[in-house]
Length: 166
Image (cartoon, rainbow, N blue to C red; front, side, top):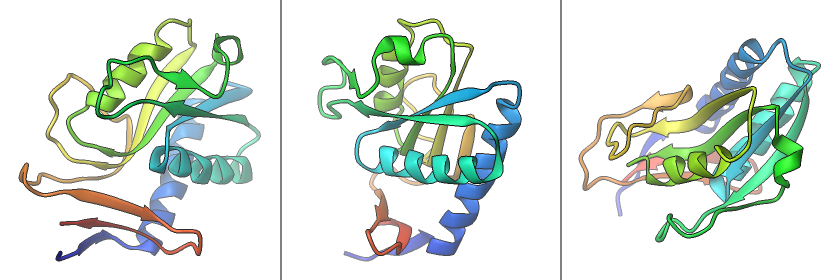
């Protein structure tokens, strides 16, 4: 398998910092926000953004893990925070790659059951192949790729993060 690196570790670090500043600018009036990361890479990405947000802003950041079956997104979605803990707060739904929009739209649907002050989305890579009317409010990079190409984001425990196209 041929790996074409589209984002290096340094580029991902810069992107995390930029997205954190954009989120802070959007939620500057708030005292607390919730970063809801979709299980695995989305949640890892959310944790990285949360660390940066806590370093640059006075915002209290709560992390929420969103568990969704990516093969059957219509099945029930579960979250590590109860509905009461994100009701009437600003929320950012975070994932690593926005491909067809299926995972993100079903996750959005889950959060629409609670009243939120503001609801935004953040992704590291936006593939521009949407099947649903969903967009990323904060994104690292936009790629127009063929449907046969696959974008993979790697967050390893040694801090060697990168995204590649295969």
